[in-house]
Image (cartoon, rainbow, N blue to C red; front, side, top):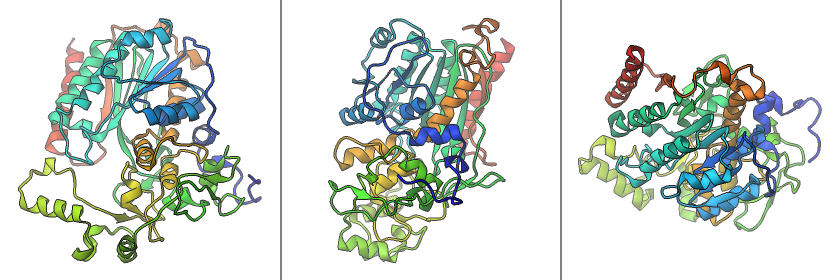
Length: 467
């Protein structure tokens, strides 16, 4: 890649701090043998490796990943460069991971258990068997006793079972000796070019209090926004700039529009990509879809089209919501079908359906998988194993590497082994576990379910004060 034009920008850090920038853009590494040591990180439910890749670029390369998805494990190994064990974490025993760490204390366990049962993108079912994986994560933490854990999940977890699920999870983390802090965060505040709300629970067995990482950016996607004196996170058009026109053939790689990056985020995504071409940048919309897309302005959805252009699946769902009396909390949100995005704003949350449902701001086509990967902060050199459907799922389910790097760097900054001044000997280990704090929303109003969750968490803190 040629050097940036003088005066256009000095370096990637003009967009985001150096430490964050590095996480999103360094070239994937080939699988290699890694020497185990006491500062090892284990990645559970690792998927395509977004969480692990971000940690790696911050200097905390995981010892291994673990996931039930074969394609995701292959993607992980090809890009993160450490083994990914293809196994079912609902049946895997902690002994398996103890053997990997040779009985040593891991620095951290990271992971985001499958969240479909709690997701607001679909009908929520707190009895979904996938939800028990959250407590299996806790069981492995209890047996391996890492200094830290970082747990990520969808915001639907906050009100699942009217708050009882989150209450039980936090209470169990405290019971096994971990002090925890819980926040709902929007990863756009850390520089991601999409608004992506997630629940983070970070805990340590050291008994030490700690803050969450400071927010670095303001953001606005048309649906979520937080304006401040902070710079705006990269917009959608900034994030996908520099990519050439998509090809209709998935097997064809597409060259960049020019040798010079269009902006700092484009430069970040290109770094390490020696081919100067990208995969997964393909689309082939049908004539009917082109007709639909041509009528949509930014921000408009399927409901803004004439009914004869509605997808059959959208029509059935839209009428069902009106006619069958399904309770609001079980409808899974208003159907959009398709939606044209605003180019000058941050993108909406990237899911596994984004390359079908999100329409390019100015072109009459959906976003490509590579554009979705960029919006998730996967660099262009990151390759995904499997067919298009598998790649879409891997991209949409991932923890964005950029956000993961912010969390890793924050952990490094507050852990004594890395020179922060925190001394384990000065702390009460295992008998001082407490709920350090929580942030469920920054909105002035709360739903009845969220109010109940808040009340349950307040009860935990009150009981600790009385103990």
